[in-house]
Length: 449
Image 1: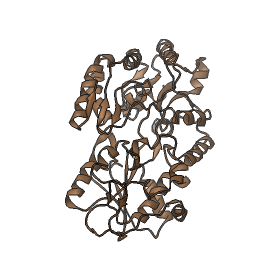
Image 2: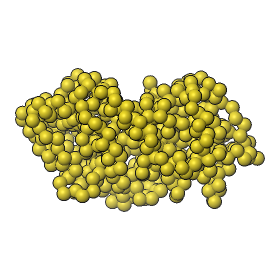
Image 3: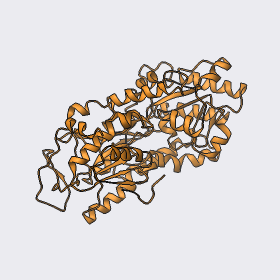
Image 4: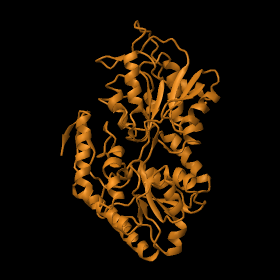
């Protein structure tokens, strides 16, 4: 059974995952109507295990995963519910969980969130169950890419599982690069210079886009701009006017001014109409290859290639940004933990979904290898994309954290309007800082500047 919640947008191998699970804690709790609890000793005490239908909430992109699991496991009764996935920081899930906490019912067993900051509210709300305290074997958890599950860790306890990595790389049109005799830039200085050259020699062509709300996660995060350094559960350091922030903002301003950097979203009809066939380069996350170039812009096969993200000259510690990724959470209120944990393990590690069907680079290492092999065998890309993507997976700069507030929403309300009005990003850095500080404080953060 599948339904869709307000705000919604648009599995045969199950038994093997049971062998990978540590054994779900099925000790019955005396309290029948409340939620599972975690004691001071981090011992998870689940609610009474009565079984029943497995309720799974997903966004439209992950709907295929839940449907495949149900197809492969017809004996599992499921309610598959689609919602917006908390896209763009909508807080839909948080709002619903707050309601369920008040009424004492309604919680889904497993839920996908497109946000990597879900633990900032889900743990205090006692919604999400601790996964490394007896629910899932450490041997399975060790398969995730290094640092991938950091957003899910709170005081040494793992409260969610990362779905995919969205590390940034440099996408480029190999055919045009060869035709025009250009070298793929390895530094940001070379990238800016090539943008100036393209503006003069091939006006109308792009070297990137700054028109999406996740623009700072592509450029400023990769440039080690300390706009969002989470230093504790409720502590953040914000400094958007540092040298690292200013030099990247200045680079963006230069390329916006000469029109080699678009200020419309890569998913907009305007971008598709005016720029789809005029992209020389575009820094962006791992999922750009399929979601943007192949599906949205319909770039023909054999043109798009991948290179490492540029670094500032003299930089000895390569850094990249991250755009999305998403997490899976297991409800502490689930009365069907065995089925829920089985699904959670499958949906995050299965080659059938993560390796063969998932649009993004899997956070689970073995599935990522399968995913890369499938990308290579597709014949779509002009080079082997595995090397740059694998390297970038371990280079996401840790100085940009996952606070409860949405950086994308802040950028959209603060910087995007100014860009559309002709303002420079450099001039808006102080305003951006103030907005981040205000949002963080409203969410109870201690702010250092």
